[in-house]
Image (tube, rainbow, N blue to C red):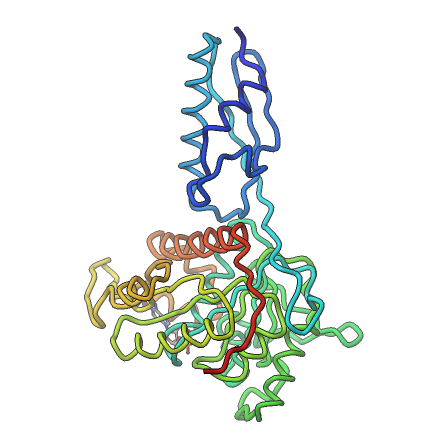
Length: 365
Ligand code: ADP
């Protein structure tokens, strides 16, 4: 019996999404099935172009269709698997009413217990990594006390532009970006009282013309202050990524940040260990801070671990030069950054499938 598109659908019913553990047909991921002679073709719509499981899904599809062809005795020469992606939309409601950014599908906050752990470095490279994988990505430098985006993205010579009362984001390195650092005198200290911090952050987030975005990455100020509170009330957050270095003291601060997001009702996407160990120019590893500390913290708190980044001269140099894309010139560094980005995207997809977008509520204990 020759293979038909219905046979392909039957075979795909046996292929599970590795994260969600439901089959591709039930999940509505099968967009097209075709048979031409003895060759099959299927188009699968993923929930992110950064899906870490693409190769596994492709292998499982090949095995399932090959088994189906053998079972019905069909002539079979293989299957062409095409992947497309449609990033899911998170909850449209926020505590304050309508979503002010309806064109943005997923809003991901990047936080840390304290400064200097590489939160901004992670936020910038996460945004650039997702964009390199094909996602429409924005970066909001929400660290209104110490904005790093002007340097890390090389915005020094870029002029700020507005249309009416909306700011136009900078379009650099494949992403859209906005930062308070381009709106104020770079050398003046940024002293904000609570309500001013609230207002400044709100304006940056909502008066920037982001357009349609798959992911908006928000680099938060370190610690537990006004901005995370404003953010959790203002935007429908997919969740927060916590950046932590391995030392015990960093873990203690990170725990407090985790608890703050939990109190705000913001799901924790997971933990990234930065400065995990020093990797010298020959590729040798040197353990400075106690590699694996942040991973242990994540596991003991029941949180996902999203990957580790070593201390690398290239990361620092490319941050100082404002050339994040150059991080991918080093294959190992590029691969580490891609793993982190894929893990974040996969976890956000899973959270949105599970409907974990609890309305942020504040419980003061
Ligand atoms: P935070 O946002 O947590 O204050 P930054 O991202 O600004 O931290 O990083 C602080 C400094 O450390 C910056 O100069 C940055 O280039 C550097 N840095 C961060 N992560 C790494 C890393 N993995 N390897 C090398 N330098 C790093």
